[in-house]
Image (cartoon, rainbow, N blue to C red):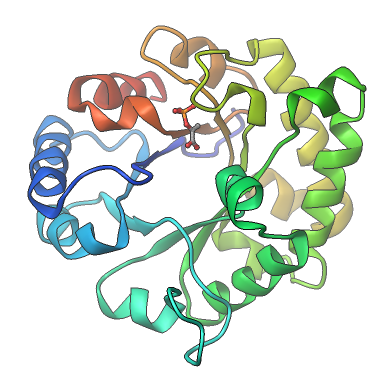
Length: 253
Ligand code: PEP
């Protein structure tokens, strides 16, 4: 895994009330006390950010959001901006999740604009890319992922990319119980790393972390995370259970 520190983030999606979120976050923090081998982020729904922020304050666990608008403020009902997230203690933001692309019409251009807003505020980002089952079956996985990577990162500098993590999440593996095999995932991760080399040079690309996401569980995390270009994971369902999430985090070490 070169000398990149593994990074595991929990995407809680539209789950938990603030009280449930606080309990879950407290459980994770307690279980990971004195554990520093892996970076960890918790990304609850917006309304739970304050509760999770309280639970992770003073620890190395990052507070993450699940999305962010590219503009600072304005007439964008239902959206939140990077300065708003920063003000409540968020340090990292997931962008371009396939559920945002699939169900809410987010585009590559939109992901790029959102990333601009996040980086301008000094926040970190986890940018998700990945192909659908149909695209994999058509053998166009690399075209699709390549396009998403180029579109998201085009125009940014290598220095800006230092705070960006890529999450490769095959859409067909998210929440389905189907997981890319370690070899399938590694192949796409290596492809993405190759694109980052072209865009930002070998040093910046070697330092960037590429997470895998898609039905990662305690029983498959170790094998996935031990692939040379897989630097941890973005975890959905299994991040809602303290024991499962902690086991996955520890598999990254
Ligand atoms: C995700 O939401 O990013 C994800 C990977 O979900 P799951 O782990 O449930 O497949």
